[in-house]
Structures are given as C-alpha cells and as structure tokens.
View: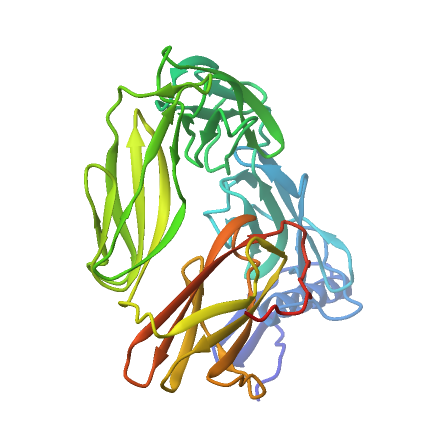
Length: 437
C-alpha cells in the first residue's frame, strides 16, 4: 500500500491501482500553505472515493459529490397532452444542499410520459411511470400519473331522423373535450327509451320496430347525448305476424299445418300479402321441411324453428320431431297438469303403461331434454311411474310444452305432452300433489 509523502519542493504524489497522481503546490506563505494544501488533498480524496470525509468541508470553489438525489414534480397527476416541470436537487453526506449541473432526464415508460432535456414532463397515454434524473451516476426518481382528458360533451349525428318501420340507421357519437377537441378510445353505451318502437345495437345501428317516437341515448363516462327517432309505417302495412301455434310435436313421417295471420297497426287482418316460410334446425339433422303454405313434414328426430315472414315482420314456432309412436305405449302426466303454474322448478311425474319393459323416459321442455328416474314405489299393475325435478329458470315466462318420450325394450316409442305455465315470480315452486291418470 502506497502512502502520501512530501518533499522539500512541495511535490505530493500517491501510488495506487490507477497509477501515480501528483499535486503540485506553489506558495510563499509557509504554514498557511500547508493547511490549505491539506484541505485540497482531502477534497480530492473525497472526489476520488465517491464522497467527502466526515467533518471536512470543501473549500470555496470545490464541490463535494452528491450522495442523495431527489426529484420533485410540480404536478404529479396530469392529463394526456399536458405538461409539468420536474426538478432535481442533491445533498452531500452532511445533508447540505449542493449545486449540481444539468441532470440527464428520462422516463421508465415513454409510452406513458416523456421528459425533455430541461425536465418538462408531457403526458402521452393513461398510466403511471417514473421520471428519472441522473447526476454523476447518482439516480433520483419520482412518480407521475397520466389520466385521460375528461369528456365535456358528446356530438351525436344525426340528432333527429325519420325512419320507416323495419329500416335501419347508423348513429355516431363523438366525445369532445372542453374546447371541442375530439377524444379517442372511449367506451360508448347506447340505449333506447322504447325498445318496442326502436332498438339500438352496441355499434349505434338503430332498427325501427313500430310507428311512434323513440329517444336514442348515448353515454360516455357519465356524459349523455340523445337523438330523436320518428318511426313511420305506410297505411295498411304489416305490423304483426301471428301464428296459430308457437310450439308443436309430431312424429317422423307425420305432417303439421301451421297458419299465419297478418295484422296492421290497428289490428285489422291483412289478406293480400305474401307470406314466406323458412325452417332452421336447432337440434338433429334433416329434421323437417316446410312448404310455401306452412305445411311441416317431419323426417327425423330433432327440433326446428319454423318462421313466417311478411313485410319485415315475422313470427316463429318451435316444432319437436320424435320417433314414430307406438299407440300401445301410453304416456300420461301426473304433473304438470294442463296449464298448471310453476316457478323456478318444474315437477314432472309421468306414468307409462306398456306390455313390455320400459327402458327409459326422456322429458323435453324448451329444447332441453331430461332423463327421468324410475320411481321404486310407482308400480300399478302394468304401469310404471317416472319422476324428475327440472330447473326452468332459464326459460321465459309464459305457456310452454312438455314432451315425454318413453322407449320400451324393442326400441318402440310412446309419446305424451302437456302444456304448463312458467310464472315470472322468482323462486316460486309448485308443490301440489301429482294427479294420477
């Protein structure tokens, strides 16, 4: 280890890993020179070693190194596009403030905020990031949060329009800031004051449903704007299509005649309009066909939706196609009874009379099949009882058809069906005892 030495000429030298550093001091002031030189050397040591020694104060003109760098931001929350000033300050080991040069500025996430060479921070996108300053290898940082520019108002176009029933129109909504500049990347919500007259999709497309006036409202971040839509219909145009039945069950090979009645806005029957019939398979394949006159022909087991349309209005019936029925297999219902009311759970009790063993009974409601369980105590001569509790919370209130299909050991089928009413009252469960037929 090398140590400091002095010679009569005042030359100070130090040997070290980095080589020899020399400090030449010239003076004519004797001991005063010696004390001053000592301070200068100690200050030099502090710089070389990354700090100043305890209890030593740098002489005038010599800056002690920073050991702590802090960054302050005038406004720690700014909007996108706004600016704020960042400032860096430093302390030495004694806690004294230091004069520093120009820091090197940066941000950890430039996609959120940027900072200029003179410490001006600008918001780029919503989020949070760190503003960082570097001085002689010492780092300081502070957090800044960038928020979206608030929506001040919404421009909706068109604000008024007249539309024929069945037609559509595209509405657009532009969020604006307080000085009218457009804003982007905002969540838009649409709603209609009367969905019986007009419905609006999430993209702002409005469909006119029935004559009258509807208000279409758009909401963005708590700010609202509205457009008024007037729906018209030609005198005598079709307002509704009414089918003679909304559900039905037929066996393969059988036929079912559907009929559609057209009515205008006053409820009058329209007889001089064409009706188009179509079929859509819900379950199964090649289930059924429908003729231009509404005659349904069952071909294979499954479920289809048969739709009648005229002048933009339509109605649909759900048709269940079952296997060919063996009349010797008799299926009857103990529950539900005809038009019996149920709430959230449908209690099903089916009695099957067959000369042969019945292998299974499947009950179907609203296209959902349920396998019934054989009741151990349900034997009455040649009859067997099958039961189930079926949740029906997912089907809408109203009248529905329950179909029970029994299969015997030969694979032959027996069929039974009954109508029941789904009550809108939540949690309502029918507990009346089954009625045996």
